[in-house]
Length: 189
Length: 233
Ligand SMILES: [Fe+3]
Image 1 (cartoon, rainbow over the protein chains, first blue to last red):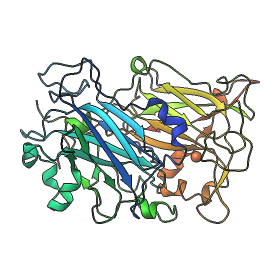
Image 2 (image 1 turned 120 degrees about the horizontal axis):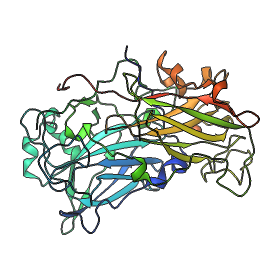
Image 3 (image 1 turned 60 degrees about the horizontal axis):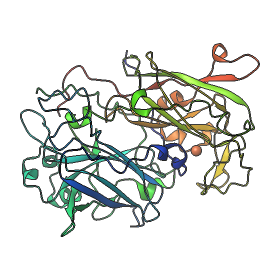
Image 4 (image 1 turned 90 degrees about the vertical axis):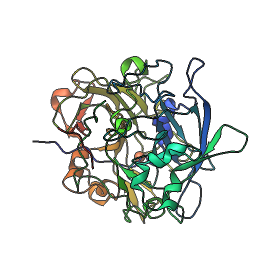
């Protein structure tokens, strides 16, 4: 008989005590392959006010599209110099920033190929459970082939998942809105 | 490569809703549009493996982190991390944080008029052993008031954070203590539907006590388990 998975509870306003010791905002080392990028954004609540007591975690493949995990059995070289995990608490303006490399494409269901993307977990006071979303790159031609983006029927909603590159820099902007007209698409995993 | 074996989908009625108006802050902080279920691709079935080797340190005794011993009732908090089939989840990080014995967090935002304890930070982490077991020594946290509604008090609790083997298995939860009269009144605890919420209450465990030193509470944790077949949608 299957056990019931333990229920989620909020991280609460004091998450910093237990969780910021593992903050990781620079994911790539000197030896990491790939295009250096930064992703930054802000977390907003239903009033459009910044959320200063949240935490963002990210998980991504390396530049070749390989995850640092034994279940990734693709015939691509493993890269010890890239773990692929980031964590940071939001600042007073609800802001967060990660420096990383642009992930490569990884397989999707069937024989599809996913567009480059980063998995994003959002934790905050005032929310009992984690919110899950995905960051895609607005200037990426393969977005049109992505099987997960295709699940979002409304093009306006799909745009909430697209991080936009600041002209002349390697920084992609990705704001997360919990509610409102541009409410971010959240996924159930 | 073939489609990866995914994880079991969430069982309806076992997890809190995003919007839970009794917990007032959820009103402005929960999505208003339906979430979209995604198949478990390689992105979801992988995840950061925070193993003992990668973590590199252990901080499983919260009573010896400062010069003197903290005030309060010293306790053991231990248990097993398992998947939905009851199989142990070995070598995975468990993070924990809590307030002190008088109900005050070592945190600038906490303005509760109860004494800070200079010898208690309330933070620890450990990695499960080969049987999925973890064990902390800490002090019993106090109850504390919060501004959700008139005379609202959080029951004594310890915050837990776990990773497990994949992105899907991530969990942040809270452990409560048996027989606490505040449990029935707490909108956060009651955000988890019955009967799943009772699983957040630890049990007194005489066998784990340390004679003349510490009482013990057992808190087993169940993470999402693997499905038998690929979980395409
Ligand atoms: Fe708390």
